[in-house]
Every structure is written in C-alpha cells, then in structure tokens.
Length: 193
Image (cartoon, rainbow, N blue to C red; front, top):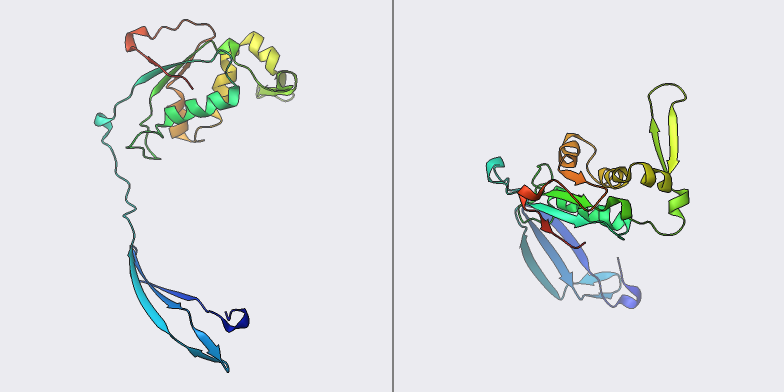
C-alpha cells in the first residue's frame, strides 16, 4: 500500500463494535524513508449508523385512496411502471416491502395505449391451455383488438412481486377499455403519469 514516490499512505482499519457502530482508525499523510513508516498524525472517528428497523403500520390504520389514470396515447411500459408503484405504495412515507399498503388504480381508455417502434407487430403474447400443443400466440395488435384490458394487466402484473403479496396487489388494479368506469362512488382522484 505504498504510494508512488513515497508521498502518502492511507490505511483504513475497521473494527466492529456491534451492529450500529464501527470504530475507524485512519492514518494520514506519512513519509517513508529506508522502508520505515513514520506516523505524522493519527485520528480516531466513531460512526453511529441509523437504525435499520422497519416500522409497521397497523392494518386498520392503512389509508387506501382511489386513483383514475387515462391511458390514451400513453406508452405502455412507462404507464405500467407508474401504476405498479402506486399499487405497491412505494411513494408513501409508511412503505413496507412485505405489506399491502398501496392504493387502488382505475385505468380507462386501455384500448388507446401505444407502444413504440414495431412492437405492435413484433411483441407477442402467449397463453397455454395446459394440454399438449395448447400454446396460443398473438401479437400486440391482435390482442388489442380482442381484449385491450389484458395488455395493461399483463404489463403491470409483470412488475409486481411474484408471490401472494403480488397477487393481492393485483386485485386493486381495475382496467377498462373505454372512458367509463363503475367506480364513481369511490371518488377516484385523477392523476397524470
């Protein structure tokens, strides 16, 4: 660890003093002559880390809002990432990775979502009946003409956790092909993504 030309040497040694603190000994600016190390200055620094405990919000205190998103002329992937973040509640101050604290999202005009490039002809959606040779494949355009809601549902579902939590989060996504939705009683707030 000798510097070129014998100018300086920095040596760091950390000694663990439990989970939340460490003592770091740093040696600054030393000179070397005839392979001997001469210490000019020494400093001891104690660092206290923040607590890494996750605070849990009680289930009966979780506030879930309703949002409505207009998917007309929106890019599919960029729209899906924002929807997935709202479903997970990642922008909330009490976000916890292993709890469902997200909000409900209503997506309207799913039939007008767009993709860039030649994805409308090249992007494939596959499903399987479960029987041998039962794979069905269709392009983005074909699925958009048949079931336009399925496109946004599959994009968002792929961005959620692949476990029971992800399946529970997915139930809070409501997608509709046209501009109308039956959730006026919940008074959803419009958000622009």
